[in-house]
Amino acid sequence: MHTTRSRPKLVVSPDGHGVVSHAGSRLLADLADATTLTSTFSEALGQLRPRGTGHDPGRVAVDLAVTIADGGEAIRDLAVLRDQPDVFGPVASTPTAWRVLSAIKPAVLDSLRAARARAREVAWQQAHDTGPGIPATHAAGRELPGLVLDIDATLVTCHSEKEQAAATYKRGFGYHPLLCFLDNTGEALAGILRPGNAGANTAADHITVLDHDLAQIPDAHRHGTPVLVRADSAGGARAFLTHIRALRQHGIQTCFSVGHAVTDQVRTAIRALPERVWHPALEQDGSPRAGAEVAELTGLVDLTGHPDGTRVIVRRERPHPGAQLSLFDQDEGMRHQVFLTDTPVAGGGSIQHLEARHRAHARVEDHIRCGKNTGLGRFPSRHFTINQAWLELSLTAIDLLTWTRTLLLDGELAAAEPKKLRYRILHAAARITRGARRLRLRIAATWPWRHQLTTAFNRLLALPRPAD
Image (cartoon, rainbow, N blue to C red; front, side, top):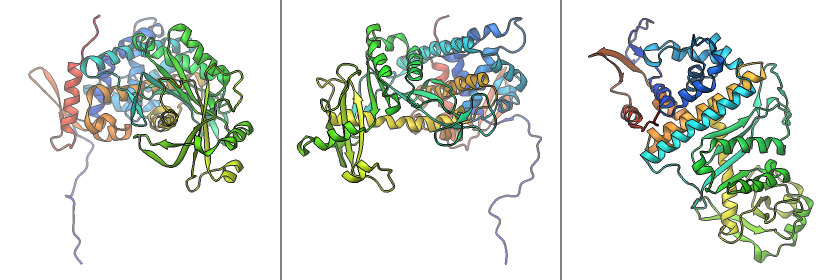
């Protein structure tokens, strides 16, 4: 029998010159410069460089964020950038990066957050100058006005002893960070690192994260723009809802849509509802949702202690195979989910629209899943303060990927998840050539996404820069 060779025979050697990998990640580094992220980080971390020598801590932090966005999972993954100085310039050693992270104490962390906010303002202005600006988010086939903040917690497993790692409610071990994403763009606005046994419904933590979220939004959008805060039932604490309402006194037009537990009182109210008050639920495209109905329970449930105008809305739906049902759901033959909102009846839309709007909170699960592939799924140190700094740089990495999609890409890539961006754009190989006093990065002529990559670099060069 004769064998058929389908690939040409290769001789492999480690002696190539002028060849670089991950060439597309230079987009992220240059975008950090164009949005002033590098300069604002340098200013925020300038106190960590008292003698003005060695690597700029702000540049080190940006290089770490680029590495995380590129798919790096450990500080030593900086070697991908460091070993290609023709593309990425001088990059700090792993020990230097460790020292920078360990020096980011809580006060410095606040400065880093403020620097992210200033860079975000520039990025949003660039989006406005070069396109339609920050896009609207949608639910039930309609645009939602203003900005939508989705707050949710997640569990991150730790496989070694780390400070403040603890047993989780799912019988694991690790951390329980609380995060917030902007549904309009997918930006990671804020997050706090918490022990694994931190309460899911701790009002103080939700208030802290929301305050960090709002500080990230540029003034022009924070004031005068409707801001919807969504969360699951863990965000239903009355103290948190009261805080959201109180923000209106500071000129922030906030409202909420949060999950609510199906208590005995809620069950009694559901059983008391006549069939005529149930209305067909809607899909996210506005079409009827088969087997699902919604109704309002306001007035049938005691909401003492909640902000005035709080409404209760319930959805019942035929359970899908394998759904976990309570005894009440089993008796009724339907799965029930309840949420609270302070969106008024007048001008707020039908209860079907409000229910579909709340159900769209599930998109945060996709953001968290992608975030766990962008630094949030693995913390590198046994020291809690270093892991806090790593979380902040992971949020920065997510922002860089989001700004890349918004400002530099279009078509399918403008909505691509990080894995697809890395495969098609960031990890592209290229060749470095020199001539006419220029350094050229030559993308392979056979690379399927070479035109999208070169177009992105051209758009980057054309981005308006803020005045010094």
